Image (tube, rainbow, N blue to C red; front, side, top):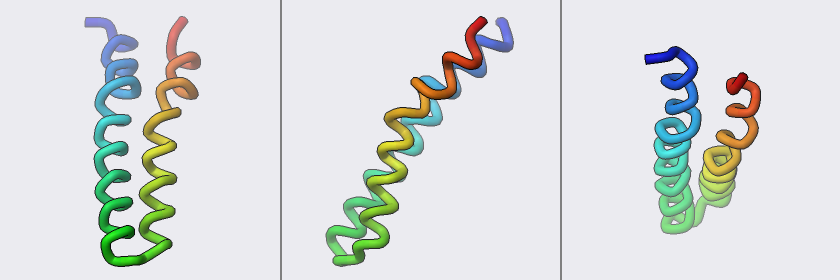
Length: 62
């Protein structure tokens, strides 16, 4: 396998899924416990997870 394929797979499928899940858990935790800081952090991580493939992958492809 090509190194570029492995790196693109990490940034397009694996990392966004993990960050999205963590962000979702933080949002739920912050809303249930009424902690705005945790909720905002969860939303931020979720948004980063949504946009990281569009920001990173164009620089990795030839």
